[in-house]
Length: 204
Ligand SMILES: NC(=O)c1ccc[n+]([C@@H]2O[C@H](COP(=O)([O-])OP(=O)(O)OC[C@H]3O[C@@H](n4cnc5c(N)ncnc54)[C@H](OP(=O)(O)O)[C@@H]3O)[C@@H](O)[C@H]2O)c1
Image (cartoon, rainbow, N blue to C red; front, side, top):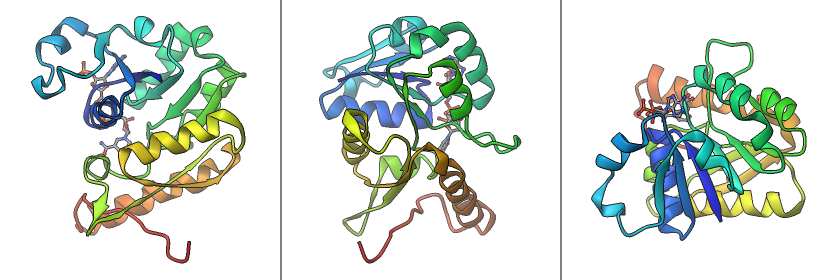
């Protein structure tokens, strides 16, 4: 699968590297591709990873992950909106200061035929790097289209990170997914329990 990962920082870099190891073609969409190529992790040199501009990365992507600062999303949509349609779009961005934490509404408006998912936003990135707790995978709660190929793809992409996917529902459940990141912050940061902290649903 061809995956464009917009942002190669903590979230994008971690997820992109794992998907590359799982055999996907990863195109990081970044602001300065040359600098990123120079500083690329040598351990990932044998995998199918390219550092490109955002436009180049999304051109023939099947899946696009948004892992940029939330302030950047509107500009990317304004510039590349027409190229986002008909693809699987994953919004991992969190805007804690806005009424709506996610950009899913903006993505749906810009790309009405895209399959938009809200995922990878509800846990700190450390849990994407180390998803196992005593050998047990943490759960990742997400929402988006429940049927079709996109749903199967999304589930597989979560499993390839080492997490157990728990789909809460369609995109209308985004507020529930976003309430989980608030809980995660309260526990991990405000209460000081540490960032390698995730959730497990019992009984399923
Ligand atoms: N940190 C977490 O644990 C966590 C967990 C879940 C969700 N999130 C959300 O995920 C998003 C990314 O967070 P992060 O922690 O990964 O941030 P980060 O480490 O600062 O990485 C952000 C990346 O976005 C790139 N970037 C900035 N503007 C860009 C643009 N216009 N086009 C392309 N790339 C651009 C940056 O590139 P440069 O290197 O050139 O600056 C950097 O690689 C945020 O919205 C955050 O709220 C974070």
